[in-house]
Image (cartoon, rainbow, N blue to C red; front, side, top):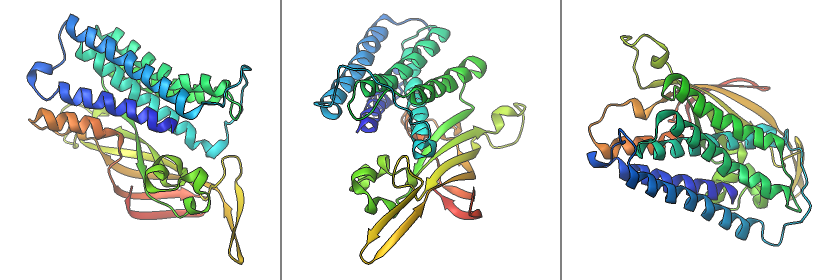
Length: 305
C-alpha cells in the first residue's frame, strides 16, 4: 500500500509534466516565473500532504504507539525492498526537480530542492514506521532513500543529465500463490509485493561517456539488474509450504543480470506529447536479451522483463 501511495504521487507529477510539455507554451521557463512557481509551490505540498494523510488513514490507523522504536531490516528480502526505496526516491527527486525547473528556479536550487523533496517524501514513511506497533524506524531504509536522491542530484550537478538511471521491471512468478497475504492476492498487488518477480536495474547510457562525435547509438544503454528468487518470507531464506501431501521447500537466492536497454529520452521526436510520454515511462526497463548470474550458474534469456 505504501508503494501505491508513492506511485500515485509519481503519476500525478508525471501527468503534470506531460501536460506541461504538450505545447511550446509550457516549456521550461528561462527565468523565475511567478505564476508557475506559485502553482508548483501549491501542488508539491498538496501531493505530499495527501500521501501522508492517506498513509496515516489507510496503513497506520489503529496501529500507532507513542513510543518511537527502531527495527533492523537491512537483510530483509535480500535487499530488494531497499532497491525499491532507492528507485522511488530517485524518481520523486527527478519529478520535483522537473517541476522546479519548469518554474524557472535557478539550476542548483532546483536540483537541491527537488532532491530534498524526493528524500523527504519517501522518508516520512520511516517516521510512521518508528511509531508503528508492527514495524520500526529503519536506518537502512533511510540510507537507501538518501542514496536514491543523491544518485539523481549528483548526476545533475556533475553532468546536467542522468547518464545512469534506476529502472524497474516485473514478470509474474509462481511464488505468490503460496503466501498471497504477503506476496499479493492478484496481479495488481503482486506487481508491488512479490519481490521475486521484480528486477531493479542500473541503466547506463554508453554514448554519454564517449566523445560527442561518436557514432555509437545515443539511445542504447547497458543495464545491470538485481533480483531474487524463491523468497516467501522477508527474513527467512529457507521456507517450507504444505501443498497437499507434499512439502515444497524454497531456498532463496540472489540473481544478477547483464542486459541492454533503450533510453527513450534520447530518441529524437518532434512531438511534445511523445517526448513527455517517453520521460514518464522511463522508469520501466525495455525487454532485451539478458544473461543471469546466480548460485545456480549462468543462464541466458531471449528476452528479460
